Image (cartoon, rainbow, N blue to C red; front, side, top):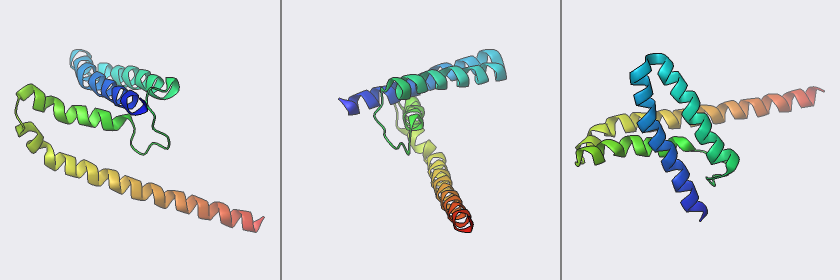
Length: 124
């Protein structure tokens, strides 16, 4: 049941972002986009994490995975063709490489902070 709850939580986040965010940004411009970001992400974070719809302890990929899957597959279902998915592969590769780079840099920062804390402990 935990897995089903998580899938539903991720799917709801993806559907709201892909459906509402663009509409608000299109209707109200930049302010609409910022309002959508605040409203959608905060509400979905509250439901998924605070209420606990998703079961993702030690999350390395969070609601972004559901949003990414929805954003990638929505055009596929709308067009009734796999062509939009194939066209998105270069973007997906770059996004994955960017995520991997961010993860490596985060580990480097974490190791450096731990080293700095250890050095300051030894000095004291």
